[in-house]
Length: 264
Image (tube, rainbow, N blue to C red):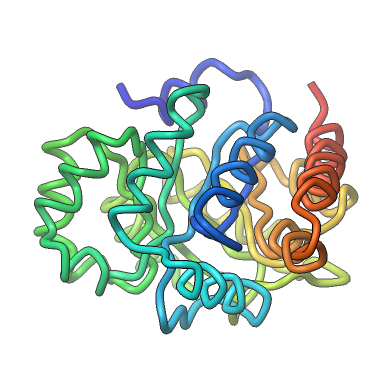
């Protein structure tokens, strides 16, 4: 049993997943931000792995990737970041990573180092299930969950197939397109949760576009087991680049409002 499966089995309520890019805006500050997100109530931490061409991400998170890379982000520093977080927290940690980074490191080596650092799940956002046999084998050897994404445009047949290649939880996006906070959630969110529940027994976690407590309550009302918030957290980093203390306080207060919206 993994930390992710144990969490969903025992927590008794929907979970809050908070996202930040590892190393944004720099290595030390990035570690502090991750700890702030956890301390404010996130049940799962999702770390974006800095990459030069994050095609699934909108402008807010793209700029975060750029800041992290400019600040010296590397794969070694990514694993070091996770090890530092693990000194004070046992919350599940999931990586959102572009497959080029895994492939360049070596699939087996990346998965081995990830497990040793304390990573619980990996979402290789641009790796289709048809091409994932090697990675799934190594993830299984190291007891790391393979997270996958489905969208409102995913057919029922393909959704069932993707779910068959997934463990930990299934990541549902509220919209087509890239990440980014939105004023309103897509009407398709409730239907997507319903459809995904027909084809998978995995926990269903919804992300993309969620930025307000009312969005969180809306997602919880669909029956989803988790809510994922990314761009709205990362924007608070960008808003306080000259004051790390204010940055962490803003993130802390914001994440608390999201956690309160989930309820007990």
